[in-house]
Image (cartoon, rainbow, N blue to C red; front, side):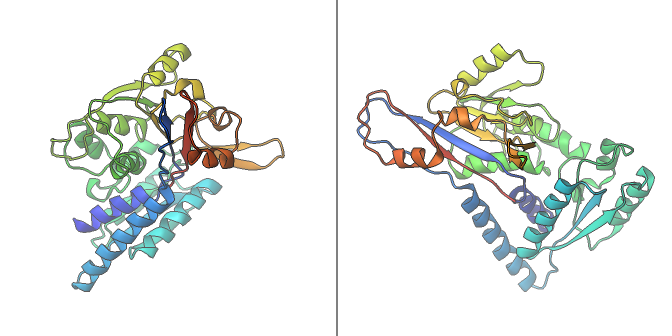
Length: 328
């Protein structure tokens, strides 16, 4: 069981980039009080904790946890993600391997490979990198992984248990959002939270944990008042919900969806969206859902950082403290 807990936690640390922004409004305050939420340092801290736990576990005579990452096809982004996951797992003491398959692999052959891993008592966790080729049913494949070895938390048993506030394995990106809110002590009790995006692997589990009762068995509840917006939410209604939100978690993959005028002073924004775009110079880069240029009010990050320690001489000045939170 401890093996699976560590695998679940390290999967949380290994997510693609997530950005968190805390917007602080000062009204008549003599000095700007802002803090930097350093996600890179947080990821490093969590990995250090896990490394010690696994070292102690192995030193007691137990074997190290083991993870198998399955990747089908040649998608560059997927290969990068898996490479980073394997490297981080090995770094903290997990025995991890990548199983690569050609894109022409049949669905039945993939399920057979997963079933062999299910039966292998030396394998504690199985991760199937998504997306899969179009000829393969992702839902069927995710349900083929034994629930107790389902590091991603995509199996219907784990999803169902999450919805019932039962102890379970939670999708990594969603769990990372909750972990950040807890570790940075962002108040959620009774607060208005808006989740933009309703995907079954990200938006839905985030909303479930944000709204659930922290006193239930899962221990993951955040007791927030949650609104879920999605692609069919009218733009004017999305703006209205966001402007009233104390916490916004956006996970749509739509660049520049969240503008500065949609975020109220004092709100916390976690940007889970990740999209690869090509800029004017022809270079590819990863961007989130938040329109950074708009949020930055056409100012550079350096100027904003300098303003954090600047004397506030205006009774209605607003300071934006932006930091990049990510875990690989």
